[in-house]
Image (tube, rainbow, N blue to C red; front, side):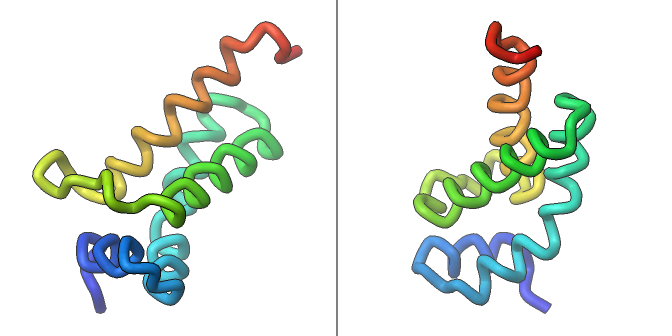
Length: 91
């Protein structure tokens, strides 16, 4: 079984299989954080999709010296989730 850091390196090189494996492993955790912040499943799933789409497009910014892959993705999910909560357009 590949480590998450190895998967991130492969994702950065455009490996769709590594991306799929990483998604399967970490999407439930990231979705959980989004749900806690947003309290709306549809919005949480939208943020989740945005986070992983962004990861697919540019995995290079990940720096393993700053923490694990899970923590990296959670941090990248919390910011837009909190922004949505604070948005004046949100009911």
